[in-house]
Length: 534
Ligand code: SAH
Ligand code: ZN
Ligand code: ZN
Ligand code: ZN
Ligand code: ZN
Image 1: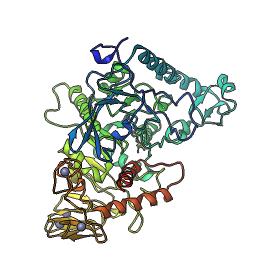
Image 2: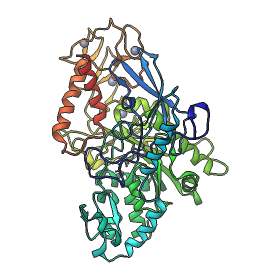
Image 3: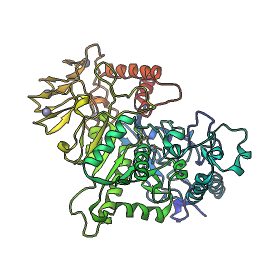
Image 4: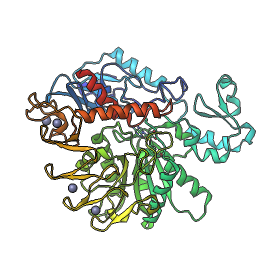
């Protein structure tokens, strides 16, 4: 074992996945702390900007560890690369979860490497996937009265283990139905900087499944969609003529207790890492192979705090696996995909996948008070489906108000009016937008054109001074919010930030206590930045 930076193949440590909710000491040992580390500030990496600096990442090249490559992060200031580059864990975006950190040019001492190895060994999951599969087989043989699930360890218990868990809370009489719905048995790992586990509401999950079936798909590669996976697998085991199958790729290893090795792969979607090595990769490859024309679709719902670039790079690799899986190839086709993500990431996603378009369908979640589907007046979910399938094929439920725009050739939300000037249904958030002739585009209903800012903003906004340079690219004449180098920049004046602050307050008030939202990262970051500036 020696230093990774002197080209030695011996791996550095890299996180094996985020631990469950650290805010509660509910999951000690077994599912917790499988991660390790050093210290510093990789936590900023994800949201992109913090104060006057931005942190971006690059694939880590040589730093490939036993548990998956770390990402190399670069701090930038005023658009310039600055300071030392560092490696940080790709899965955990909060050093509370995983404080793996290493300067790129750092010589790591033998002692520290040894300590890392040791830590890592001690924080491996208690059982391997294979062991879990065996345990499951034994578990289902037990009479109902002997089927227990330890809530603290998030683990199915066999009778000879009860003793060890005697002071833990547990559930009794675990039914077969419960075993088929692990997402309801397991505690959702809501920690927004790691798992950000937000489960589909039944309405959305059922809609996705129906859509997949109607489109003629028979195999679903479920990347970070455990609930979709479980309704598919559960139906497949109950209904004889149900032909759809799913393979779950997720970093949440707790699922290995409920699924065989050809149903679940422990996977990190930020660095395309299969924890189960070549065997797991082979499982995935096999699944992607389209036997007798059974068509495959990838459905993914990543944590929204995640780096779009890192995610896109992994999805491209999965798409490449799909392409390779077929002899003769799929010629120029791309693996059909649903990427579920908030609408404000549209331009970011399109940057990496120009073939994608955003559907108006509002995806909503169970353990998420804010993003629930609602008619006008109620708050609406900002989460959408991005797909490379022909938009006109994605039929949205008319009973929920969606209608077909014959000009745009796609289903749109009821409030989304076709703008004659833009020649498109322009609303992104479901509300009716209006056209601004000066900006030459449609804008949110609450916005007005500000001649000072020369852009549209909320009426009571504070005009931005543009004399100081933009902190993203360093150039004068514009601010971060309108920086042309940030393709996802939304034209936001200060007032828009205020609006977000308000949204954050509402989120805080509205969401039940333990649910720290998947999306809050986005808002909170901005608020923090603002505070720093003041
Ligand atoms: N709405 C989906 C769940 C989405 S929540 C459903 O109901 O099925 C995000 C999911 O991505 C969680 O299951 C989480 O465990 C998983 N995840 C988070 N980080 C990940 C990573 N780095 N690699 C793979 N999966 C990850
Ligand atoms: Zn239209
Ligand atoms: Zn318009
Ligand atoms: Zn202004
Ligand atoms: Zn700029």
